[in-house]
Amino acid sequence: MADKKHRLLVLTGPTASGKTALGVALARRLDGEIVSADSMQVYRGMDIGTAKVRPEETGGVPHHLIDVAEPREPFSVSRWVELAQAAVEDILARGRQPILVGGTNLYLDSLLSGRDFAAPADAALRAELNAQYERLGGAAFREALRAVDPERAERLAPADKKRLVRAMEVWLLSGETISAHDARTRALPPRWPSLRVALSFADRQRLYARIDARVDQMAAAGLFDEVAALLAAGLDETSTAMQAIGYKEAAAALRGECSRDEALARIRQESRRYAKRQLTWLRRDPELHWLLWDKVPDIPRGTAEVLALWQNQNQT
Image (cartoon, rainbow, N blue to C red; front, side, top):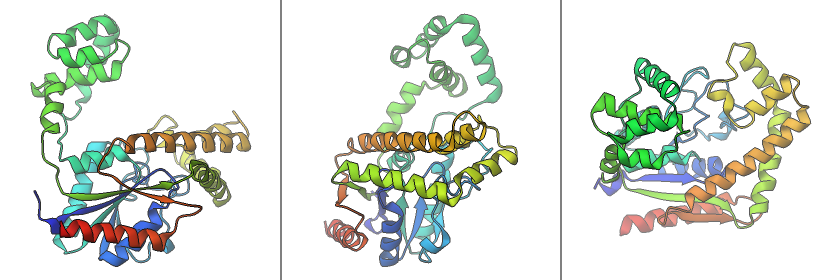
């Protein structure tokens, strides 16, 4: 295991739970730098709808992995892990403390676990396999996969074209089934030891009210103008970036498919649903430390509690 001096501090939790402010407060106490773990804050020009940290909110603390991609670029978990690992190693090499802050838990789990990724996609082969799937049909394609990877074929429905094609692609490119790859990577030790803290509210309705208020703030700050500017710059509405909560609903309003008030109501609803999914994911981690707010995030109390956990872990 890595030297305990090379631990990572991780702050996660649902949207609007106070991660940004607590991360900055802890970084200032621990001589730290923040590595953002947000799948949408990687995109330039997408500031309001992603609640991206503003310069005046950073407290002078360096933030990494924000604005590292153009919205029209495809951006994957494997690319984020590659960039995040480089950022963490650079921060450690300079004698500072990396603090991962964000709610994209797939990204965080992939980085901390030490897992590698299956063979990178091959556009030509992917197109060929997609055509084969359409020609054969889902059931026959799944039987072809079963011949090489029966475990994955058994887990996938014939209609799950994307995962069936990917499983076959991995086998053809690497000679290793995706089932074997996943089993091998699960056995790897963690890349770094870590203290993982999740933020939320004791009363979930307070979280939902905070989410609703944030959506109102986004609208007042110019969310619709931000989306209009992205579309005017040629961003395809089918791009991954434009599927983010807040952006696809605002785009629908700009097309005249609904009113702005209706779009904002949908954004509130989808944001609450996303927060619920985030909480469900986090409850699977038995080593997670929970910090539950009462009415509003109490950053001084939260800072003291996390620092106490940090020091206690350092002594064990």
